[in-house]
Amino acid sequence: MSLSTVLNLLGFLNLLLAGSMAIPLLVNWIYDEPHPGAFISSIAITALSGLLMMVLFKRSSRDLTHREGFAIVALGWVNATFFGSLPYLFTGTFTSLANACFETASGFTTTGSTVLTGIEKHAHAILFWRSLTQWLGGMGIILLSLAVLPFLGVGGMQLYKAEVPGPTADKLRPRISQTARILWEVYILISAAEVLVLLLGGMNLFDSLCHTFTTMATGGFSPKNESIEFYKSPFLEYAITFFMFVAGANFSLHYRFLKGNFKTLWQDDEFRFYGSVAVLATLIVSFNLWSSIHKDFLHSFRLAIFQVVSILTTTGFTTTDFEKWPPLSQYLLLFLMFIGGCAGSTGGAIKCVRILILLKQAVRELYQLVHPRAVLPVKLGKKVISADTLQGIWGLTFLYLLIFSLASLALSMMGLDILTSISAVATTLGNVGPGLGAVGPTDNFAHLPPAAKWILTVCMLAGRLEIYTLLILLLPEFWRK
Image (cartoon, rainbow, N blue to C red; front, side, top):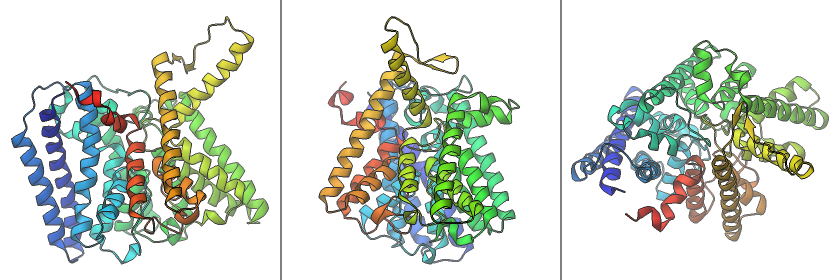
């Protein structure tokens, strides 16, 4: 592996990151707010570090090896977390590096867990940067690099496979840079549509942009303390529910749908499973709320469908304090945190396709006990799932649960109660946002010990990069020539 090549490309990523910081600087100027120097300094430091890496380290080859691809993606996200935290530190939003990195990681990984208190008192530029990090991280900062930097197209498949969520990478065009560009174009188009819908619903332009950024990224940051509950608008709730559901589906399917293949969504096994889980969970929670708390079924349904889709897609917006819901509904939401959206979406967690394949394999094992000599391949649609893919899914699921268990244990050793420990790890590892207990929808993560914040920051990065891409850096063999 060429470390020089890795550092050279990280320099390009820093230039891209510095360019994105110019947007909140413009917001700062529009609203005539203090601290423009904080954003100028952040841009200068990030850009200068990028230029230095490009000058001091040269690419040894145009082609990227498998290991170089993993290193660029994993270190790129760690690098973005550090440099992306500079605006928070220079504006005085946070004085602690642990808090600044936690908030930045939560943004780029589209988690939505926050340590920011009194959200509405902060400058528009900071709130805009906070939402923009989620939008950039939703489709992927590496994927954006592939879309705008054509020279990364050679060997770019290694980067694409390391960042795009799912057991397999879906190529829409022969050149990976073309695939990345198409996905970003679809992402921008649907984002523009949501901005217009939210404006029609009565939101101002600033709030519409911020909520669109965090809806399409399934991130959940909001410029309002009360999240979507602030607006008290059924229209906005249903509109955001729709766009959350769209963002939780595979964007390759959206592209085919927009190209005229209107059956592509229903023909996809994973999308049908994803939709079925959303419908079933919504009905269960609706009836549970109707029978125990709310006597109006339509109101119960409105609360249920928003919160179920928000948690399933790992967005994390809230319209109510679901910690006051019956235990059945709370448990179901906690369960949904592990499922997540579809592969190729901006959602987090294990992903529907993996859950579906594991269920199919479990049924096959039961059937094979009755018919031990039968040859029964696991299929997804008409495609046979290879043994390598099955092993990868089992391995990732085991590592996911192992990290969940160890991180929960570590938090409980710091004095946090078991519900807070479990839900804090589940929501950060799954890139969901709000949890239960002391990190519930009306609370945040600011009161946690610094060590707990660092652990949860690593969980957010591991969850976004689907475990393997981050853990592989810990293997000594990975760094040997």
